[in-house]
Amino acid sequence: MSKALSDPEILSIAAGFVDTPTLPDDLMKSALDAVFADPAKARVALQYGATAGHRGLREALAARLMAQGLPNVDPARLCISNGGQQSLYTVTNIMVDPGDVVLVEDPTYFVYMDVLTAAGAHVIGVTTDHEGMVPEALEARLRELHERGLRDRLKILYVMSYYSNPKGCNLSRRRREELYAVYRREAERSGEFLFIEDASYRDLCLEGQDEPFIKSWDAANEHIFLCGTFSKAFAPGVRLGWSYMPAEVHEALIRQKGNQDFGSSNLNQSVMAELLTNGAYDQAADRFRTRYRQKRDTMLAALAEFWPAETSILKPDGGLYVWASLPGIETEPGSPFFEEVLRHKVLYVPGRYCFCDETQEPRPRNAMRLCYGIAGTEEIREAIRRMGLAAEACR
Ligand SMILES: Cc1ncc(COP(=O)(O)O)c(C=O)c1O
View (cartoon, rainbow, N blue to C red):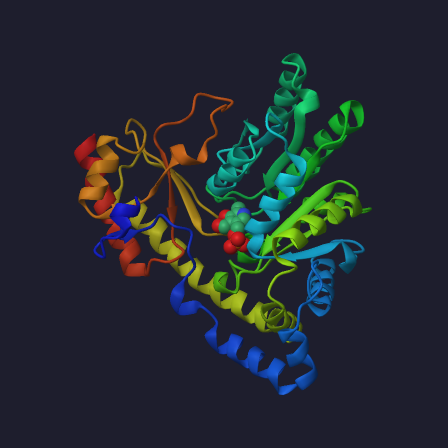
């Protein structure tokens, strides 16, 4: 794929990059000017800061999370990280020893799977449907862990709660409640493990209402590690993410993060604090949502026009991805379809990369992730048209 990406003629709907023309350079510049218009703020921005993050940003974020329905967010239990990726990496390394079990959605965020593999985790998939993780499938996996003598190795349950990567699906309120209930029943009966709720795509809701964070049911902040990012609805180049967690996890996380970097860029955090408090973050998120609605619809319309009628498509209500399956056509790397699509100079993410080794059902071989994040509307339409020709040729 990296070889193919070096070809400038390639149309990529693979990488989860964001829409370049919508990136908020104007809002960023105004916020940077505002920080530097105040010498006291400017000097804070240029000094070392607290490892857990800029106080003003943590307070603004806590207020925002409470406005989004979380009860009693304590800024002292928040950590600002270098993207959401750093918080996932750090918490995983705190929790997981080689051979420990981590349960993930099947399919899941494949970059996180690399983090788990590097930590030596035994990654086991839990079946998902059009909403996301299925509570009965989670129960079945937990039973199986007991039977296999692996239950005391279980350390993490990782769930994407909004517009997941790669399926683009969103848990209903009822499903959130059920998953949390299954988790608590099991943890109380057989020992605690950490629930990681990855809410990275929450601010990219394109349709319908915002469901509550699963963390809302953990009102005393005892069980769930909730993480998110400013990458998807503002700018990934700022490299800021956040996490909110129970006290003992926070202590361990801050120790680890201190060893890594003494804290994330205080300059970027100062600007982000400004953006959250003056409404500019919401303005940027709003622009992205408008743009992604248009691009998602372009992709769905092109799929309907150019792909075989039997194609199965999950229509996303948010996020950046469309999960599509072509019955009877394998999409794996090296498959005739993959090669034909490459010959047409298009790149997609084969579904295979998103499934762990221990899937609950036979791993589907005909799925793929399509991203409408960075390609323009004309490129999206053209990429889908060319992939339709490839599907025709492989039938
Ligand atoms: C589900 C999920 N979580 C976390 C991240 C981390 O993103 P970042 O490090 O840019 O915040 C991503 C990025 O694509 C993602 O898709």
